[in-house]
Length: 249
Length: 166
Image 1: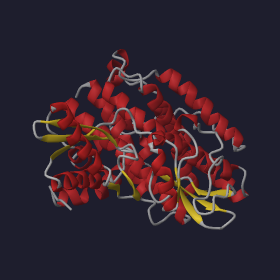
Image 2: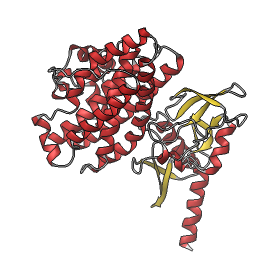
Image 3: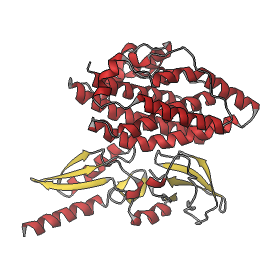
Image 4: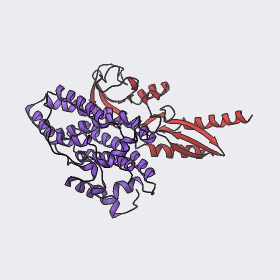
């Protein structure tokens, strides 16, 4: 697999898996408006994933469709960030994950506009607008949890403590990805990390929440080494397509 | 004469496209929304280029089918192409569509998309589409579709959809 294809699949897989976790909230949101909001964000990230898979298909040039990428690859072939696949917890957990991922993608897409890969730039131009609303939604909730009741604060603190360690994966440069930075396809991860950290600190500060301590833990989803949560997610997401290959509705 | 004929045919295509309504906004045509980016008449075919409002807009397939159906009904041979660039903006919504959006209970965007930042007060300038009051509250950043947010009017107490600037 070329480094270019690998990079596009990392972006596509993260958006698809995150979208699936968002869609699992459908019918379970704390209030109707939030239920709809999460479904809409799931739709945005699914749409972004589809555009990226279509691009991956062109790059690979082996005739694999969007559905082939989504439904007929096993967990070790998925290259999403581990944070996207973790099983849903309470609402604070989902809002903190959304804040981390949406902020990452908002900044990434903005930087990706200047990519030497023109198609990636076109996808970024659409996605950056959508990500801006995702960041706003998650920011509102994290701030609200932070300066709300003791119960809300406990929950958002627990979510931060659990999820913070997974964000180092956003900015780690792995050997397999090195060529895409040299070719100007990827973005400068050091600059992205500085921007992300500054923005996240500002939100946590407004929410009167402490920035969690860094840890030595490193997640490795973008290299295809996942938590057990991804296999469970894929088993459900892929079951229909695998039981009835070529099914149409 | 050829040029005039081509222009007439093009006008006929635009007239037909103006009757194709957005399935989620059934008062507004896809031309007024800025979804149709261009048409080209080539060797008996009409090539219609459209762009999605949102990456995951589920109405795109329905819109493509509606365009094909409308043009085929008028004896054209349509081909529909989808482009991503330049990315669709709510700034492209025609002035004529704004009052139509209000007529179906949707407040049109109050800002140019370029003016929208993450930490900007998103409520300034939004008016209730029913009573025109500016006294409103946000219920949710996301409404019945990805392109809309949900607000409530504090004067007439009616909830309403707001077409988000993007």
